[in-house]
Image (tube, rainbow, N blue to C red):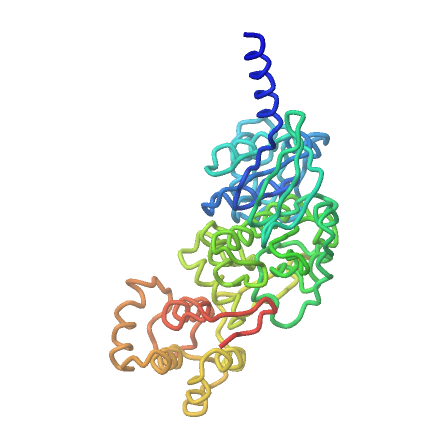
Length: 428
């Protein structure tokens, strides 16, 4: 009997000593807002995700006094917009709490931490491991293997994609990789934007302002390793942290889902997924996110066909799409020629005036789609106000507005579908 008991004890001790290996699609390591949103987005994109936290839940946030958000507070996009609505809902009945649109967003740290915890807890496919130190990291094929300490033993997590959402980028350092270099903002990088803001006080993030390209978050010398906060030149406001996490979580999910590496990241599918989850690619102050054609404007603008403009209004620098302004032929010609081989022929034949007209636009669409011009004109005349709800009259000689052009271009010639590489160059 004693021998059997001794054998059983030995067996149980040996069993308990066997390390556990947890397999996941995406592993996010960090304790801040970008870590939480990266994990939430990855799991909402239907990938099995683990959020690994060395300490307690959002401990850095909870060590602060009242949190006051000024920069980018009014951007209603994605996970930040969802979080902001929860804060406003909780405080709307509080005496003296300012709920006007231009007021700073204020909340107590435990409230913010609690809202993010509820958002994470109600997200399927997400496992959260708190108070779990990580001791080593190594490559595992195209993925990663991380050693963790739990229950007094060393266990492992294997992930197809890894996100370093620590403030100091300690995972990149542990992996022996190098941080992404400072981005040189070329003419076309805006085409790869996955994070956007509305406050120039954060211009150190982007010398072009208002956007951050995908390449800023990709560790170049280590497959399937991404970085969030440490990629930025200054510590961003909470809205930008959350937007960064959401963008990076989308990229990591893409690599895991398609079983590919960061070398094969595709810009447009990542951006499209972000738009599906109400993210912004470019933050225009004059385009309401409730606009039924908000996505069409985002998609056309990020191709460069209709670029945004910075203007100073009431001592504030704003980023504007100017939806009611007319379209200049000289503005759209280079991009159309870049995307469509037949565009060169059309411009040579039609020679449109400086202000592109409704008739010019329909003619160009007919040329590219090979539609019968007269049939297309009749169709558009019927649908101008009934389907598209345009305010202007249908007049072929009237200059077309940027909003009208974006909507029609997005539907009929779809420039957003054209492939661009990570530098923003069109790939034919």
